[in-house]
Length: 441
Image 1: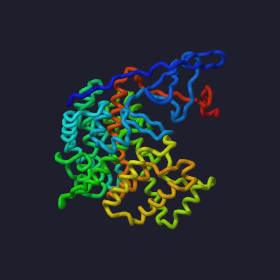
Image 2: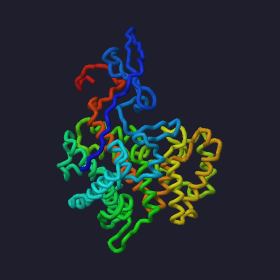
Image 3: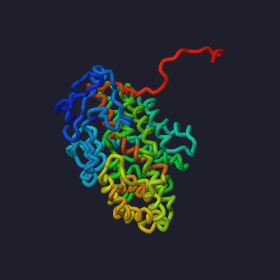
Image 4: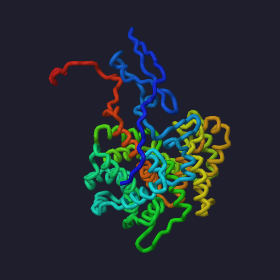
């Protein structure tokens, strides 16, 4: 393991109080201020003093934790990792440097980066018996189904890094998952297409190694294009973390029970699999395939504008970003670099995508509603051009998001205010009623 700076825990600073009155009772609740972003009303004593809960489906107005990892301002189109704009990290850094930043809180020195890079590289092999574990899956199993099972099973192979109370074991587990996830994802891909597994090489970079494990075969070596390796590295950076989204919240909730880190990450992968979350880029590409031809675009645009039609154009707009998704700007540039490198500008499917992009950036309807192409739109096109089947898109997302999940999980474990997750409910079922014997019903 390597030495590195540790982030200081700084609780939210007081910023006044808020009064809540209910049935004659008034309670003063502290208002906390973060380093940036909106203030937060601390409602922890609300129930004890007023006998009421808050109601917030989806927790969209609730801060479930205190975190110093990632910040999003959806109105301004801002995404920061540990304070650094995502555009700067994607343009000037690389994925492992971003991993170090998320895990430790600061960018590494040259020596720290050298040690970290070596530590991750030498953890990329998986236990040989895991190879046999894959044989329990059908060949047509979705790669995400395979990854949920295999990652969850890692705790059965690496007993020496499941003690969550031991900081050293937590870090070993963190390194193992960041290092082994590309190997596992590549194995899931190879298994699904009936090809032998390709082992990682220590002389290759993170993204380059993954491309080789996915596309090399024993009969023919594969050398990744620098443009494609750099593009994939950027995709990993852009997907590394995204605040308290559904899968990250799932990892934290699972971890709050004391579950081992491998089980927590498996839970995150399962949540990410949903089409409203990690499966969005797969859905965007499927939409492009459904349109099929540039000539059919006006038909779909008309349906998208029709309030009475349920059709939604996948890959446009974002629940959080009310401005242009900052990740999409980087992904747009990367997408065009990949298409130019591979000479695919004339691909029919990609022609549909480019025309949709042009319309979305210029049509008044899309501009006024801020339905800009999002990261899922561009990443789906890019990954397809690179040769990945659509079923692998979400697996690649999980690979990249693993470091964010681990950083969030570690922060949760080390937070003295952490408690086991236990959301409350607004009960709308029957009040108490007595049992009636069967013969009297």
